[in-house]
Image 1 (cartoon, rainbow, N blue to C red):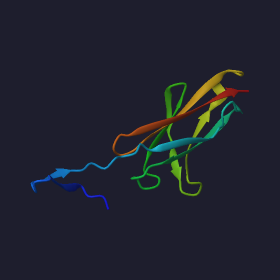
Image 2 (image 1 turned 120 degrees about the horizontal axis):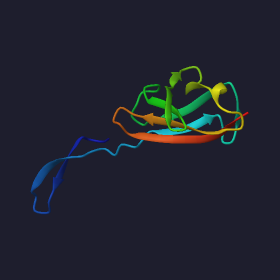
Image 3 (image 1 turned 90 degrees about the horizontal axis):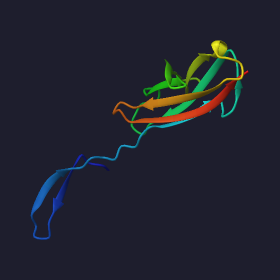
Length: 121
């Protein structure tokens, strides 16, 4: 069991109490769809798998960026278990290539990103 404080003793029997900070692992993220090099058009459904060791399911902040600009904050769906967002690609030029970045942030401010590149048909 992990304690927030631990007792440290020297060989002479002297002791002190020192705080122990648990190692916090960054959240993990994976772009489920669209996949790398997909050809997309119209409404593009972006599905993201994001988890954390110390957050309740669905409580992470997940943002989707298109070519580095924030698109939308993805919403968690308990039915699918994924975070989702929709990108309307209809204003993008046919044949253009775009980078989609999904960024997850936990309540401690730890972040992680995943990206994929798609082309508009």
